[in-house]
Image (spheres, rainbow, N blue to C red):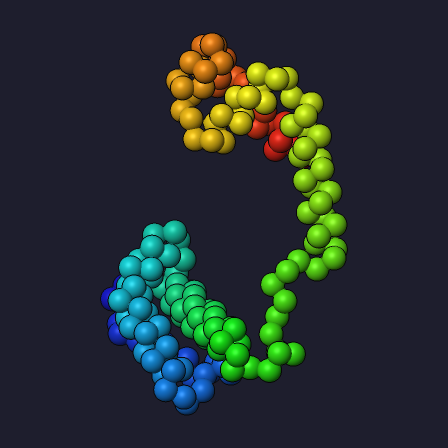
Length: 162
């Protein structure tokens, strides 16, 4: 069992997004440092979940490779937002028309469910969303703690079905 915990290096050069620029090297060094720091802990966790040592090693390496690629993309996005990339290469963060329509439909369904709730249930949900505790809601609405729990459960179940 000692073999899985031998020191190994994460080969980030296999990633097509690695460049030889100074920024990429410091990013690579940062991810490799995190790999060295957390590798054994993650591997032990995966072994405890029932993975064998070989598969655990692969999972840990894939996770850190994905982390490197994600951070590299973020770094590229930052450069794009800073104006270092052409405008055509920048991604529009706004939802596309299909997503907008789906979001609007979802909001309408949620609104209709909220409007259909009994008034005390609706108030209970609003007060909870404002951060009030169950006891505070019970005091405001003049009901018991059990009633608050029941009203919130019923309201959340209805919203969950939407």
